[in-house]
Length: 332
Ligand SMILES: Nc1ncnc2c1ncn2[C@@H]1O[C@H](COP(=O)(O)OP(=O)(O)OP(=O)(O)O)[C@@H](O)[C@H]1O
Ligand SMILES: [Mg+2]
Image (cartoon, rainbow, N blue to C red; front, side, top):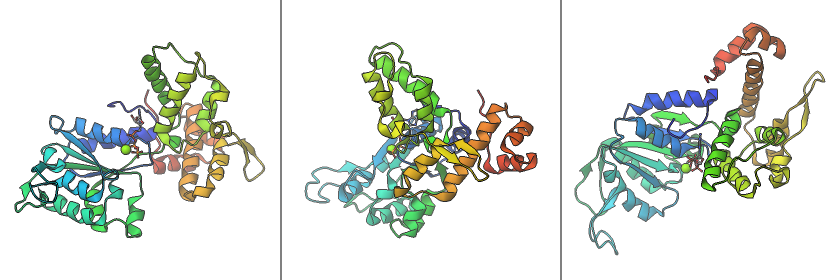
């Protein structure tokens, strides 16, 4: 879908969400770790929406200093401040009838948060130095890699603005929760970079693919994309283990479950290795459960009886978990 690669259940859920919100003009808040594809998703929503023939105007709220950002967003009139030699149309107005993509909204200053709230509520913009307001019809899609609920709880983000933005929340799953999508993305980026450099195919051994599957990808799809680019550049037709970063080579590790069962769980050592940055316990446990259940289902062709046997669970317990977690079979 619009250049978004991935067939995992979590991505399919995301596609359905994109389809549903695209037809509306509701404000959307896209949250997800860095490099998960938030910008791609914002574009997909715009392209699928009735606004597609009007502009999609992006603004990176984190990259521009406060005063500049204010006139970027709302415009200014001639003489509004020193250096304002000409009237300037703000991006809100440029996005009229289209979509405004407010990237890194979590970095917006408190002063601009107030102004933003007003625009969203009243649907009018007030250029800096202007005496009149201008009516605008703009669909806002905001994105952030920060946890905005936490920013609100710690008084760094206005609660009222959060609720205004969070009309339709979209959570983009981290790459490590997308199962075999890692392989699809590797294939996609290999083709992309091979074409670029007019090289033929670059092959990656199963051993290296296993390491990629076990790695946590803290930088998500962007990290994978950059790595594949590097490996393609270095490659003589094949990817060699010594070209991999050590953090990926270190991915493996064995774990022991209660009851003495020994299992190879590369994921564990990675998570524990990263404890320094802190992890969300419930989230990690949930994600590990998802992976266990999905791999049991996949290896039994989604036969729930057999999968339950593999996991030593009652069938009903398994079925309940599948339902509660919203796990679904990936359509080919
Ligand atoms: N599912 C996907 N399929 C193909 N390419 C993807 C996918 N997700 C992300 N990418 C690519 O990964 C890179 C990062 O994506 P994007 O810029 O949308 O991430 P982001 O969530 O906005 O990151 P940040 O929070 O750091 O701004 C881009 O080059 C994008 O094209
Ligand atoms: Mg981004």
